[in-house]
Length: 401
Image (cartoon, rainbow, N blue to C red; front, top):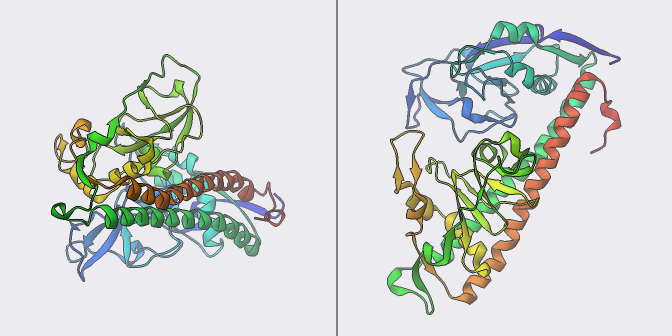
């Protein structure tokens, strides 16, 4: 650790504050600004998909709570979410945070990107600072300031080199994620253009209207973890999808409930809260792939049309159908009845047109899988290097990406 010194987070932080209690509105206007919340903070980064709008005429935002580039955000409340750390590398419009997040901003003594990664390296410790009863836990800011100790090179250029190296890895991850989002949209657009823009009264020759249940079935093959202990599982769960769209590998002894057995010919869509679309083409990197029973597991009756079936359940029209067939009270616990989805009607084209479609989208889905696997490897590399670089155990100059 030659050339490194250690100070408390509070000594290196110019601002540490919680967010506002927003006055939410649905429509954007000249008086609204974006509000980030806990759901926006995943995998060390911020997504705007779950952000909301605050009406500044009803709830003013002080200048110190307006977000800047390189600000670090920490989830301050919530079981399982308190302590998550993310850094803003881009602030495209005026933004603030709600009262369930903490904003911290570095002093001039430390490079802002290095500061962000150094705080991320202590996420596990920060999570332990959550105090209070179950469901009401909150990060203690005094302890956050005094107990989290940050090591950093005295030389600011060394700080910048470390931060830049880790940022380059994250940039590759974000680029691959954006590519996959674009590829999925392309596949959706191709399906829509070819098979949903036709009028039912003027179907091409050999086309017909069918129900999903005529060409696909729902698989419910159960895996009971209590009967097969110490089995390493490739687990496709709702949290894994939301976090990184990549399965978690864990022992069956850590899983408390039954799961569905899946393979490469399966396609998953969440029946839980279908307004949040979760569609997954599993990678099945092992022989022990399972998924949460909150997913509906589809399989094509004809293996020659598997990618066509996936395109069907990935379509906006199928998503709308699921949302119109929910049970349960409004809010966070609505579900679609799986058997109801088999009544979804679609246009089934000729075998040749389906074969042509599959030949077009198969490389798209393959590339998406390749990118997802690369991202998982990059995240493991980042998470391995992070503590070693910010402790001085590994010299940044010895690493060549």
